[in-house]
Length: 505
Image (cartoon, rainbow, N blue to C red; front, top):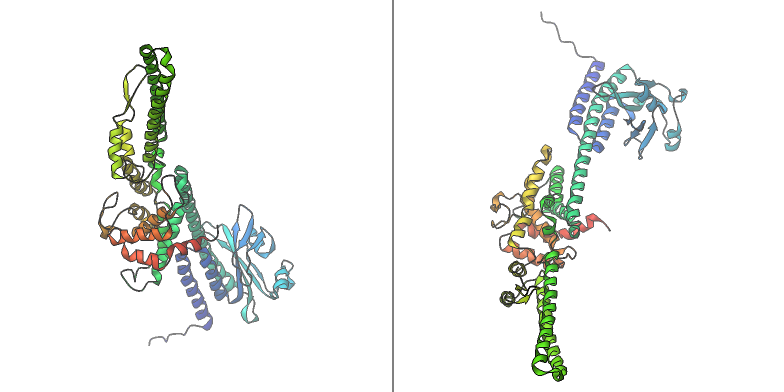
């Protein structure tokens, strides 16, 4: 005859349910990395396991020899306790469990909190949280067993078990916070290094990051079009923010004189040109003096006043012509678009010469200077522009050396494509549109917008908001920028949203 199954006792079923609850919360805690979410979860489960009215959790700060709590049920403020002070401090100091059946009958109980909050403490159970090495990392304190009961040995055992799980989860969460702070510190230092190379672009990286993240968040409210179902998690937004902040990191590998070149000629080249014109002025004055002497020999001393009058007029005219040429060259040196006719005049001016101290003819304008002054847009020669564009390759190479976490592993890839164009005319790889990440497409729009509207720089004037949008619209219409993302950029008023997020300055 088979034995009949014996039903489990109510106490055994209750204990099994609590153990199951501890296992469930252990799984939940191991998956949670946000300390602000983890701590309330631990307190909620601790209250359930020991059936208490409320719980508090204190983390041990060994450097400052004190306990601190972000979360204490019934309190809205952070609490800090010296090591060894109060019941929680004693448990952290000794590592021993304290179980008080009647709080007001125990001399160790401090009723200050009860008086200030109007709460009445009856029973207290305070246990240490120990890490894998057995070291105390904090304490959990439960108040008032429900039903007017006292905490028993089973409650102590269960709360200790939960505390051990909580200690590991908190340690992981704190380590996660430290890693985040490490990345934040690295990114901030990198941005400072970038902007130190070119102070005129200060704030650009931060503004591009704000604009790009705001654009990504705006997609959440977009229910039509190609990006209707595109959404970014908090971790993906953090990845996008880092990529945006570091998109110009490679500029640290570009020569500084090229990076900050404000005019077509470098300062030392312009100084050399000015010095040559000064020599040409002296040469004209010398030639005039020689002609005066020669005229006196031919026409006699009596003609000297007339000779001076003639030469003064001629010299003034020649010097004025020389000054006009110099003024024209200074105009050409500015980062403006040259009219077509000016190119021919630069070539003609290349034929001008002056006589040096050895009576040898020297060109007034060098071929390299003519080439630089003939730059049609901006201040950079084709070679210099390629060097500036190489910052993207440097960015990818530098960022690829960093051991990013799995959640942030695409930072180098996203930053790498921020100058690519959908029509394949971008740089440095000229890749087709289907291979450009959507994050990079968003960053391209925001990067161009900020570069256009940023405050005046030595090589360009700031463009008004409406004109910047017109320029972006033209590029989107020509197939260079993503028209769908640009439409959201405009409709969601991303510049205004990003500025509002930054707050008053």
